[in-house]
Image (cartoon, rainbow, N blue to C red; front, side, top):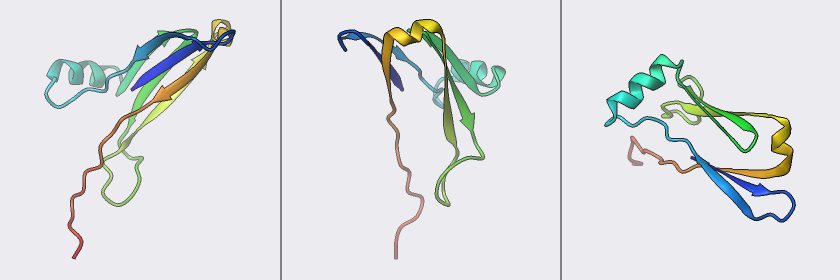
Length: 97
């Protein structure tokens, strides 16, 4: 997931903040994620951003959970316009008959 911040005055890119949920291949990242209450916290461009795991929240019958994204803005955030972008994958566990 990335958060792009643009200057409010001219809409030029000010910078990017990246948040990477842990993968099964990275045991250190999973340990950190679990120790921090299934959350990843980052700060940038006046936003404190929290990506939280929500295993009981999902969509459809075969969802394995979801994430909740929360932003808390400081006064500095009024200098920027932000955009959050996600990439994901859909896993199909059944085949139609």
